Image (cartoon, rainbow, N blue to C red; front, side, top):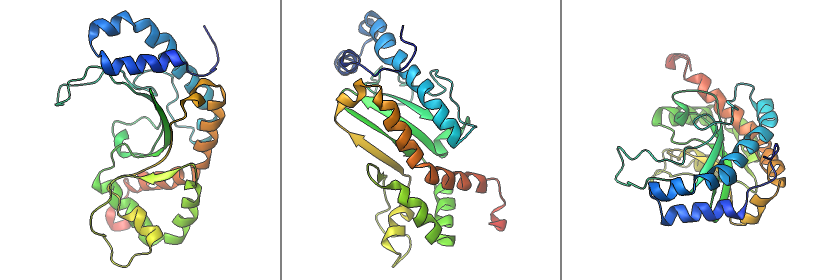
Length: 233
């Protein structure tokens, strides 16, 4: 077995494509070997390859290359969902601090599917309290934030649903585009899946994640504010 990341394979992407079509336990169990060798193993090696870079960004990141730690589960939890699809046709990794409330905290991520890849930094699903604290930082320190936001240049773009009506009238557009989000991520998306088949993917992701480091540290200031009495903000 390979001991370092050399890329994903077309066989792995074909597996994810077939998951979309088959999506039953019998088929998955018959193809579990492909899942483990062509998806799970390279994902684990990719986490290992990226971990030194990510620990320089934040020494508290979870970096164990395990499902439920840095790697997504292919099995979907369908107990409370109308969608009863058993298996996911995409897989991803994350770098984040261990927390039961991780969906409310900033997360680095890389995701791939049969015909796409994307990576970046943001919230899985920030709640209003988190976004209100983030907005508070924009009101108090707009210019320092805009300097931080310069790191969100190409290949990244800001994504996430916005409120239909501006929360603040006549706000500078470069602040408003952040201020009016219900949650957000800064993401690079690519349909050139050939990029997945090379060890060069490690450098691409490492450089991208380092580029976004100023934003990560800004968002971690927001996390620290959650421990402060609102009257002291």
